[in-house]
Length: 89
Image (cartoon, rainbow, N blue to C red; front, side, top):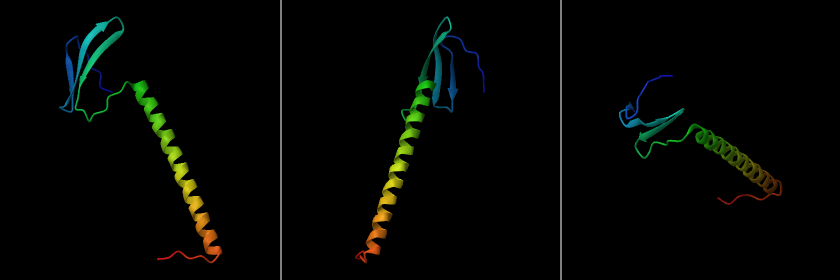
C-alpha cells in the first residue's frame, strides 16, 4: 500500500486521469473530492462490498436457474426420445 501525506487543497493523481483532492479536515474526518472519467466506478468501500455480495448472489441464482432449465430441457428431450418422438430438422 502506498501511503501519502497531503494537506487541505492538495491532490494526488492516479493513472493521469483520476485526481483525488483533500477538501477539508475536521477532527478524524477527511473530506475528499474525486475527479474521474464517468466510466470509472467510485464507491465507498462498504457500499462496494455490499454491491459485490449482491452481484455474487444474483450470479449464483442465475447459474442455478440456468442449470434447472438445462436439466428440465434434457429430461424433456429424454422423455420425447423414449416415446419415439423425433425433432424435425
